[in-house]
Image 1 (cartoon, rainbow, N blue to C red):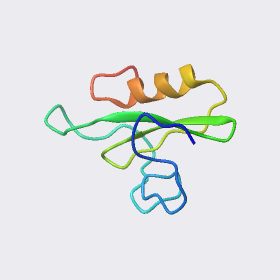
Image 2 (image 1 turned 90 degrees about the vertical axis):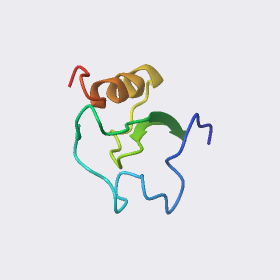
Image 3 (image 1 turned 180 degrees about the horizontal axis):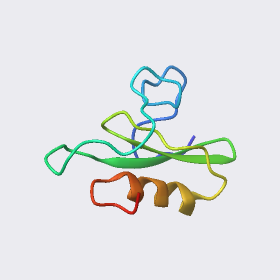
Image 4 (image 1 turned 30 degrees about the vertical axis):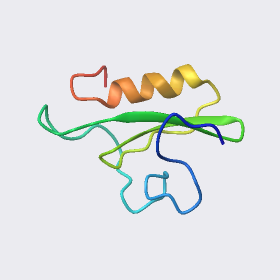
Length: 76
């Protein structure tokens, strides 16, 4: 697995079914959000330090777009 940050490994609390997963954007401007993307097999996904994890994507660019949309003030 290649990664530019935390997330995605077996037992990872930031994995989609982990104990800290949440369905989407959260927090305000004062909350520290740091997103990263990781790869698992043929899929890439975004995750955040707040516990949010995006859906698995075949395209890294889509996972990065999910991360951008999650950030406060992002597109989503």
